[in-house]
Length: 246
Ligand SMILES: [Fe+2]
Image 1 (cartoon, rainbow, N blue to C red):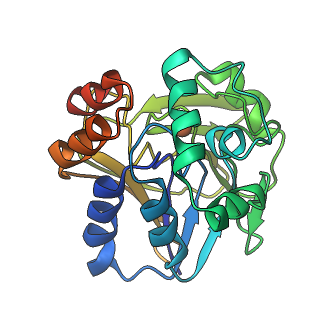
Image 2: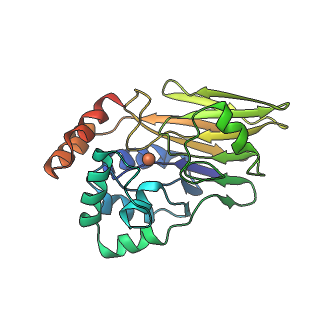
């Protein structure tokens, strides 16, 4: 079974299309989406429609998905993010707002072997940034692997012999093979708004037969995504940051 794991698209259709095109050759059986379909980018309806066309698909909600459909307030959002939430709420088709409202709360266990969540397995809105957070997170899931998003950094934490070690995934290609006796907390990075100073769209593939997880980065039409953000009169900072990946 081959899973494609992706997160934090944030209304960036160009980045999503590039990821799906790149993954076409890789024979994906099941798509696992970790939340934040919308917010920041200018193509929320097109992104939702494209993700819904994927078969087979399991997804959970992100904090932006919740805020857009009114399940959460924007009080914890910075002014730029809050402005994008208001814009997205107006731009979304009713059926897409309804879809966001009905998205599953994480964590969700897939096929008894993978846990997925947006922030952390104990709190969908929590940011796992360091080993201290990861230690806590490992005690909240039972599968060998848990995929999480929310921070927009491709990252891997390994729990082995009662110690936890974390590493940022650098470069455009990286692969690990799961070891027996170890457990993993893995962030595939963000499709639509990477923040690790690499502007390329990020995703991961888990092949359960080879026990390998590949981290992938792919170039996309950043200029077009920026043009749409500016044309929509969304905050200019949201366009600018895409070029630098911050
Ligand atoms: Fe996000």
